[in-house]
Image 1 (cartoon, helix red, strand yellow):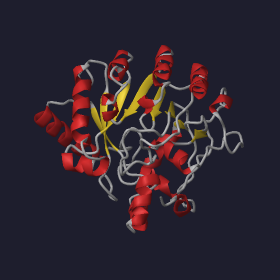
Image 2 (cartoon, one colour):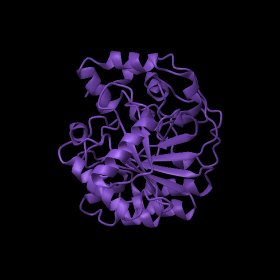
Image 3 (cartoon, helix red, strand yellow):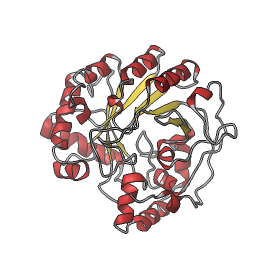
Image 4 (cartoon, one colour):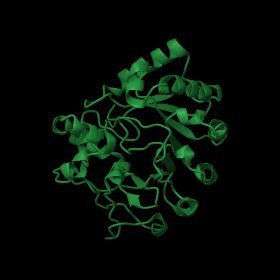
Length: 321
């Protein structure tokens, strides 16, 4: 796989600093039951990196006094980590909002039969990846059989109340472009998704989140192989909007990797660009208790233009939809 950090590190991206920390995003490991073309984590069934029980406990200890309101769980497929339910339960006991970034098909895997019900019982907000509502597009990006399995999982979640008005069970979908292009306007695409999934499959969801493909890991390597990397970076840079800088997720989010180390965002984590906290080049979550991150400079490189191009992009979808 082609490394993209050397192509990104020399950057003129504007300097940005942290505001108040609101969200702790925790990557529970890179193991996944899928290997998607657009995956910025390079996750897959053969990955061995999984957060240990001891590190899960370090995260739980941090949550007890951390000034945050949201725990955002990601992977890989976070549900495959044996500590997933322990972490969710601890966060909900503290009253935190919990988000699970779910690929949908993992809910149909052996051993996951009660995961959807567990999340409903704990009012976990699900952010589910469905990169298109057309079967051929989804399977070109995610593999054969994934589309029908995703619809089955959505039906399972709808049956539990997810996506229903006033149920308190939030189900948001995620769109990623098929290639080296910017995503379409989020609100317009959401209407298309809602119409197609509702009329064709009687499926419901709350919101559609549109996320720009990041030129790192598997997707970035594919761009290099196809000779498209420079053109894609030029597209991102030319579409940069300073107004989006105020809404980028790294201003209020801290990312923790499967080993427990802190990064300014999940994308920096995949590039090995650790957050600089109190002049330390690398900080473990066990050493974060009581740390005030407000005002810290955020590590930036040219991949950051993916978050500020056009309507902007964050873990919560478009910055300016």
